[in-house]
Length: 168
Image (tube, helix red, strand yellow):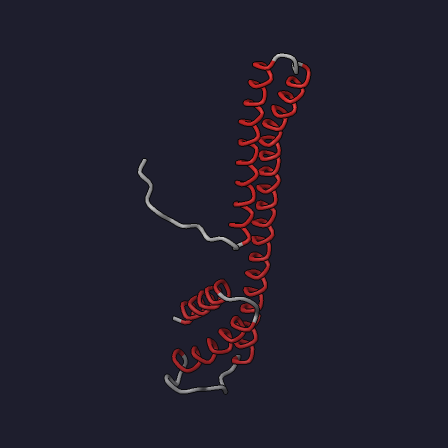
């Protein structure tokens, strides 16, 4: 019977340590757990008995279990947070590379068509065609820049997304 009580205690301390921050609740659960075990599961039942042989050792061991569990869960949580931040930075770098590539494409078109228009200045139809293509590339570039700015505002929390049904 006593073995199960100890396992239940360790499970309770581990669960409390997992779902709380810092050491306070782990230590609190260890102290209250020892008192609970003493009150409920030791003779005389439903009474506190601090005169039992080995009680200080039991209390110390349960407190150590709590501290070790709290330390491990705190470290694991910190490592997980570090891993998530690292992943976020990788995603941000990939997004920046992708966006800069997408912006370069219409920018190159604008530069190229403008250069062609200058070299063919005597051919009115050709210049108008290049200017139309430049205007289209400029609109595409502006759209990309607006998307980046919108995404930045959404990410910073300045703008919230409006969810609405869309007919596909």
